[in-house]
Image (tube, rainbow, N blue to C red):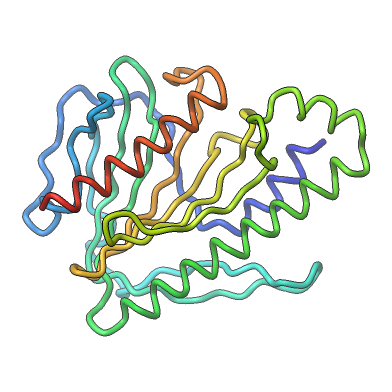
Length: 234
């Protein structure tokens, strides 16, 4: 099944997603994160849960970087974390839409941290795309089913990077719902002024606000634009 193929590729993503019922009250970000964590987006997406991600232990986390060659082993790389929070977002009456980590790099390590997470996302997305393309190429029946549900004019898996209002971002998206698991997209937003990296997993759950891939892609774009607009106004 194609789902199994993509799940294999997803192992390259440093993923930790919680899918639970959302809280009712809007948390208040602590002082170091008040200008880094939006509590509400213009489309109604709201911060529903906030927790520190590093209280003790070494000031780094490990990410897996997929090998470029098929069959070659991946490598583990350190990304520094001086402080961080996990922010969970949901639309009213729905389950989580976004699971975001907002992390300060250790002073002097931001440039390398940015390069490392970009490398990991780029390679993971390329590996996922290659697996999907190879699988559907060998299974015309699967291709016919996917072509009916993939967003018009888009590849099954796509990588995008750019800059909005001076903030770089990178994004890997599965352009069809139910392609694999509950994480249709993963993205990074980079905040050089504060040496902060935002990593967000956008989620598909049973009680999601969107029903089609195009609705999801619209909300994905609103999340990126809304988050960066919040950062720009601080």
